[in-house]
Amino acid sequence: MKKKIAVFAALAMLIGSLAGCTSAGGPDAQESTAQGVTTQAGTDGEKTTAAPEETTQGEWTGEVDHVIMTYLTLGNTPADLQAVQDAVNEITAKKIGVEVEFKAISAYDAFSQFPTWIATGETVDLMFPLLQDLNTYVSQGLIEPLDSLIAENAPDIQQLTQEGFQITTNNMIDGETWAVSQVPNVFGMGGSYLIRSEYVKEAGITHDPKKIYTLDELTDLFAKMKELHPDLYPCGLVSANRTTSEFNYANGIYDPLGAKAFTGVLMGTDSTQVVNLFETEEYKEYLQYLRKWYEAGYIYPDATTTDATNVSLLNSGVTAGYFMASAPVQKIYEDLDQLRLTEIYLGAQGAGGWVIPITSKEPEAAMRFLNLMYADSDLANLIQWGIEGKHYVVVDESINLIGFPEGVDAGTSGYYNTLGLYGDFRKSFIWNEAWTQDKNDAYTAEAMANPTQGVGFVYNPESQSTRITAIQAVVAQYLPSLESGSVDLDTYYPEFIDALKAAGVDEVIADKQQQFDEWRAKQ
Image (cartoon, rainbow, N blue to C red; front, side):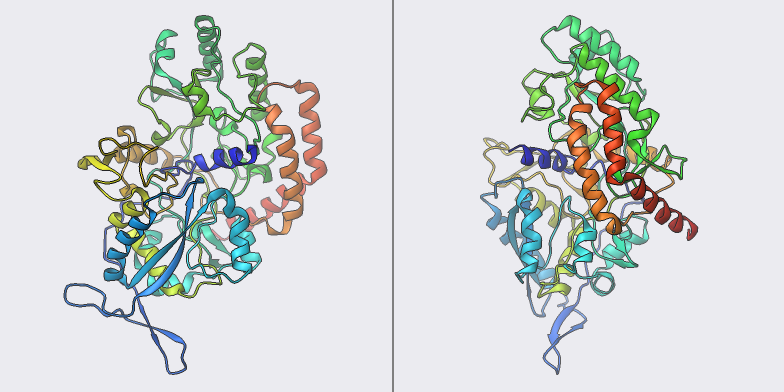
């Protein structure tokens, strides 16, 4: 159970807009009709590509190909998945000559099942290895290179790339493209503390959404809240099973260069020196605040062992808030204030996205379908949110705001899956007015004006895989206690740093620095 909760915590960062991602942005892509290719039998019996056959009404008249596409869930397959699949095929068979079959699987199970499916020859044409290492799939020969498939079948994906979106360039390994990422509806990163608005008012603070609050100011707020509500924990940390730091939500800007932060980071937006995040003065200062808060009773004492999430603790009244990215979409309730704790900035986007396995029988058709998801917002919203009138209703068309039909909610809907994996999210429906695209665009503009030196670079950790596995084990051992504030820093912190060095963190950082320097020399 705890392993699933740890995975869910990571998945939660991708829900909706994938707000934690960073990417080079550009103006809105123009909607266009995808012009794919049809496959016909050649003289040798093999499939060859030819221009699509269309009627004067623009409908496809060539062969209709069958594509099997993974459909990730958070554990429960939507009851109306077949109905949505049928509605999707009404669109895609006519437009691009493709009908899709959704192959549902829990995102938790995908970690082990995806490689197994490919290794045993199971036919899958489109796959999304969410939170998995793309380099592993490439090095093991599990997926197809995509450059020629994109060139011949995906004009809209090409256009987005030309406009500066890192949906393919961030997925290049050894000069070839291996995956296509989503287009998030907001770009950039920044830290914040999400807290019930009533507590901020009670403390006599007027929330300024543009102000960057210091950790000393946060400490004063926690103290006032504890005085007013002795049974409340002002700081809602959950560190159980933590393998990544929340430091960048609270006290600093860093760029992990498209890889795990424990493999080395650039600190701030001006640095070109890869360093060990955990040895920096900024990180040590963050731990000192956490220790102070824990000893003062501000941090939930079961943070290292609970199966609860930050949101569930907030909803149950146990805690007042939690650290989170500062993008608008992270304000999940209207009665929350986002106290900014860092600048908003743009960093390197990690690799990942839609891939085509080597077991695909219809790679050209798979790419046509993938392209249409980016070109046709109606299709993307259908896959994402289901059928209008049955699974959602439009509340305000001008801002793409939707809600549930009368008598339906997230628990009773036949199609409610919050994993946002489909197409261009700038055109996706939203469930909260706080997520409108104008707010996202303002956030993006602020981030674009403050890029790190690593934008456009993605670290390839393949040569350091053994060391990285050892480092990750050390991080998993020490981080839950350190980032709950529950252990003595004078003893536990030096042990942590020594264990990282013994696992080979300095060698991994040196390798990352070398790759980064070589990349910079070519710019």
